[in-house]
Length: 197
Length: 197
Image 1 (cartoon, each protein chain N blue to C red):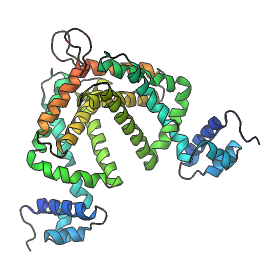
Image 2: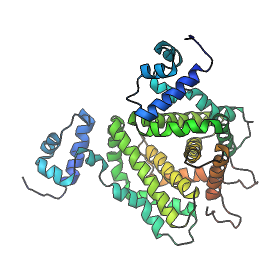
Image 3: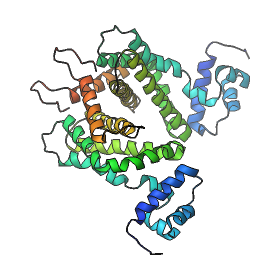
Image 4: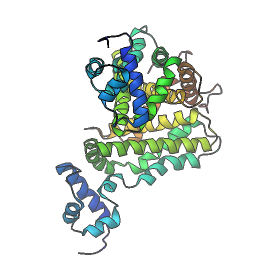
């Protein structure tokens, strides 16, 4: 077999996910994954440090997807608009083609406490990084952390809905809906009272 | 020794917390706690199911503290006002007298993954219960869940600050500050643009 092929990484990911789903994450070995993908274990380890990395690869891209629009926005951009731009960035990664992968990945994560903890840690790190990026723009506390929490909450709830059975709206549309609901909740309504969503 | 004394429960909690802090949660046995509190193990188990319960007793009171004001509010109460009332309810439980206990409890929770998971589960349950209470008032989705997430986020961030070293403001004051920051973040400013916090 070839030592390096285009698409090997993607095949390893796909094969891993199917094995994890069928027989559980813990019970699946790298040897099995490599065999099913028709590569050597060495090839597997050229792409991933361990089988867990198959599920969590691309963490930096994930974080950058939120941070890049915050860093790139003009100086005067209001905080809520920064949140909105950060959330819009997610549409680039979580495309409709990716939805099947995300749908299959979720129950694997939820079935295994150590993976659940890693997933929560991923979101916690994201929150910290967004908070730092907002502070670097001169946004004070507690506003920066609240805005970061809000961003990740809206993302997380939108993502959960995006992978719900039967859901076919885009992540962008679901995110927009949730951000609008949040705004409606907090913003004073035209008659001057706080709005009821 | 007496089989039942007023203050036994509180003494068991205080003794447990000190032992957990000194020698770690896992390494502390119920026998040690009982001995240090000068009661029998049977007395311990009359108050708590296990040593973990010492740290998590009162979960229902904790949830009720948020839910009662939501249930009691008049029909026309706007969602943000419900969130605000739910948060104000926390001041009754987390008084200044309780701050030392909360400060001592936190590093014990953080040092032990199973306690951390239980603590996160507690907040997740709280979020679900608040979301349900809001839905029962006729608030639709995704607004109800977002408002619930917002409530728990504001509580959690305020609580973290409340137990920070040197902090002496009340939980109520810290909660109000964070809720105001969130409102400022989302609400349009007077000139019609979204506000920068």
